Image (cartoon, rainbow, N blue to C red; front, top):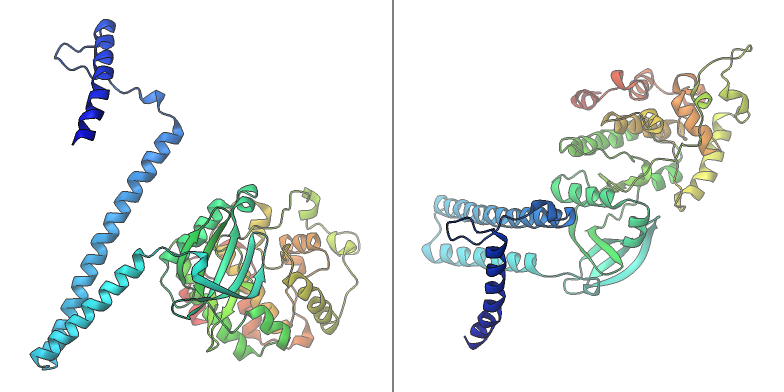
Length: 415
C-alpha cells in the first residue's frame, strides 16, 4: 500500500503540471475534461503493428481456450453416454471419469510446458539445407523419437524467407491429415528456430528411386495416388506447396507416403534467362533453337545412368534441381495451385522412365526445356509405358487451363 501511495505522489505533480500547460494552451474542452485527443499520426507504424499483433494474440488465445473447454465437455459427455449404454456400475463409472480428468489435466499441463533444445538428445543427422539441418532426436523424459528441423534465423532473414518459414509452420499446425508430416511443437532461441516433427523411418521417394531405378505401373499408381491425397489436403486450406519433388515425399514405417517441407522452397533464379531462351521457333532443319545447344541424344539407359550419377550429387547439395518446377513458376507471370499438379506429372514420369522428363546436365537448359515443354516432352519407346500412363502424364504436363486437378482433384483420384 505504501508503495502505491509513493507512486501516486510522484505522479501527481507531473499531472498537475500537464494540466496547467493544457489550460495555458487552451486545450480544455470547457467541460472540465483535460484529456487531449491522441495524435494518431504520432503513432509509428511499428507501434500500430505491435498493438494489432497483441490484440490478435489475445483474441486467438482466449478463442483457443474456449474451444478446448468446449471439446473437453464434449469428450466427457460422450464418455458418460457410453458408460450409461454399457451398463457399467457406478463405482466403475466414477473411476473412469476420474481417469479421464487425470489424463485431461496431464494434457493441459503438457500444453503449457515450455520446450527447449535441452529437452532433446540429438542423434543422427538425416538432412542438411540452406537454412540449417534435420536431425533425429529423442525426448529425454519420454524416450520418444522425433525429427528436429533446426533453422538459422539470421540466414532466413538474409534470404528474405521469414514468411515462407511462417507458412510452413502454419500449414503443419493447421492441416490435420494423415498425408502430411505432423508438427508436435516449435520453439526458438537467440540463434535458431526449431520444429519438432514426427520421424518417418522409411526415408524418401528419392532414395527409393535411386535404389530401384524404375517402378512398375502398379507401384507408381500407389505412390501417385497417395501424393494426390496429400496435395489435395493442403490445397483445401489454400496453401500451395511449390516444391513437390521426390526429396519431399517421405515414407512411414508401413510404406505410406507423407508430404513434407512446406514454404521453404525457392524456385531457381531465372533472371539471367533472356526472351530468346523461351522461344519455340524452329530452324531450317526443323529442330528447335534450344536443341542446337543441347547434349547429344542418349538412349534411355544412358540418360538413366547420367541422371542417377548427378542426382546423388544434387541430393546432398543446397542448390537443388529445377526438374519438377512448373513453367508458369519459372516465367514468374503468376501461378496458382496448378503448379503442384505439374510437379506430380514430372514425378510420375521419373517413376516410370527413370529420370525427369526435361532433365539436362545444365539447370538452365532444363528450365528452357520446361518452358518449351511442347517440343521436349517425349516418351522413350524402351520404357514401354502403357497408353493410360502416357495419357495421365500428358494431362498433368500441359497448359494450366487444361491441366488435371486445376478445377477438381477428384478427377485425379478416379484415374
